[in-house]
Image (tube, rainbow, N blue to C red; front, side, top):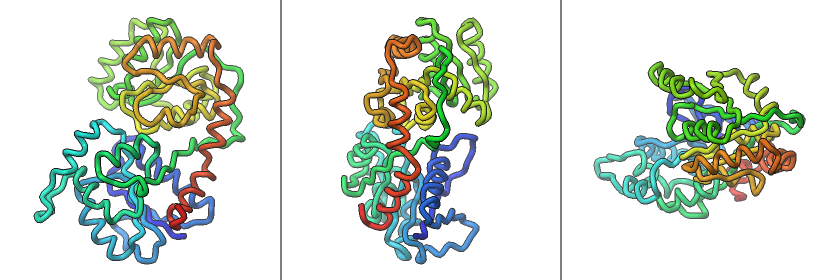
Length: 332
């Protein structure tokens, strides 16, 4: 098959979940012999010759684009890729705010307006499917569940000798990542916490460093290389992602595949990736976060190596590529 991938957004930071997901899917499909065309507005794209068109993200200009695409190829799919920071009711109200005769849409109403032209909407969790159905009027049949692969090959053996610390990587000053409560939990429960990730602005950096300067058990590494990230995945006993708002949290899935114990938020879809092999916590509770991390570090609870085996079995590139293939060909 020949599949066109379209993303009109700009990559403004090192971490871009939409770009990361698209490149992972490209790898999964190409490994099964399919051609993936990364479409650019600067190129002539022959969409009529494609077997499927995959849109990534959503914006206010979707309606015009989809109307034009639909005339050339009706096998169109969209992956909105939500980190839902609005309630279903809030999103639904926004999705109903449009003036169709004047083609005036916001990104929410545009996503609702194109639903009749979509062969499917790709979702990464059952939570995301329910959100899209309730907020934008899509049907359950339109929602195609494609859970993300970890990207870690089973041959990349995890280390059984672990150091007693908790690792976390994100944009550490992004409020939705809930790093402040994780820091407070490490202080209250006395575990070592190693943080990594980019900070956008100098003022944010100053406030963050001021907050951790009197906390000797908290270490901030800054932005680290891929090699350094993997070293911590192989070394840390626990990886914690107690986010207030998260779509999947691929860093936690990667960490699990390398052998880290996982503390994951109870909010949203991330918990669906771990079965009963991770500690699910209320991210607003410092005590739940701290207690879960401490018990894992102290070996009071152990989910590894069963968790890594589960992630490799359930979320491999091969299984994701096969599912995408079946969806694009109309088998699912």
